[in-house]
Length: 303
Image 1 (spheres, helix red, strand yellow):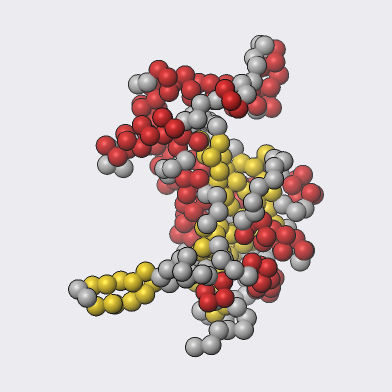
Image 2 (cartoon, one colour):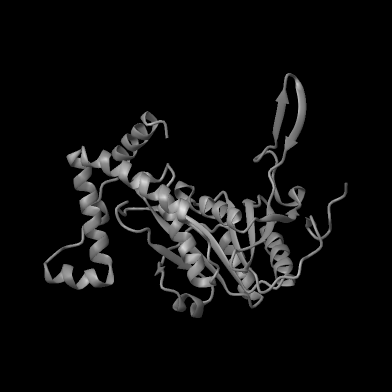
C-alpha cells in the first residue's frame, strides 16, 4: 500500500472538537521513572481515548532501531506488532476535548513530522499544547515533585508558576513541537517533573500526579488522579521504612530536605536568618547505593 501523502492515516473522519488541548509524550528522550508515560496512560484512560490518526512509520521510524515484535506461537508467525506514533482523541468527564500524541520519537524527518502534526492539530482547532517529561534530580521523595517549564514564548513562561531553568542540552522532539506550534500561533509549553535521583530507575507515581496537576493548572482539563495518588502514598511509606532503617540513607534524605526547604520562597528567608549554607552539588550524595538498596527491597517485596 503506498504511503499516504499527508503523512498519517485517519481512523475516522476528523471530528468537530470544542477547543481541544493536545498533550504530547513521545518516548526516547528523558522520562525518569516513566513518570510522564504513566501520567499520559492515566490521562488516556480518563478520557476514554480512541485512535484518531496513525503517522506513517515508513516515513518517521527506523525499523532497524525499533524493530516490530513478531508474535511466534508454536512455530506460527501469528502477527507483527509495529511501533506506531498515534494521535488519540477523547473527552474528560467534565466535557473538555483532549488530544494525546504518543509513541516513539521519530527517527527521521523531525521538521517534516512537526509540520505534519501541527497542520493536523490546527485543523482540529487545538488551543494549547502541553509536552510532558521527567528528569532525575537531587530532591527528596518526602517532598512534592516540583515542576519546571519550557516554551519559545517568554510571555507564556512568565504566566506559569513553574521553575524556569537555564541550560544547554540536546533537544527532544517535544522541544521541536513547541517551536512548531508557537510559530503557528498556538501556545505550547513543556512541563517537566523532578524525580528523586535515587528512585529514577523505578516508578514514581508522585511525579505523575504532579504532571497531571500541571496539565490541569495550565489547560483547565481536570483528570482523576486518585489512583496514582494512592500508589504514590504506598511507595512513599515503603521507601520511608527502608531509609529509616539505615542511618546513612536517612542523613542523605534529611540533607536533601534541607536543600529543598531552603529553596522554597518561604524557606529562603528562614534559612538565611538561621545561617544555613546551601551544600554544593559536590556535597550531595549520588544516591547510587540507596537506589540499589531500594530496588533490592522492592524486588524482595514482589513489587
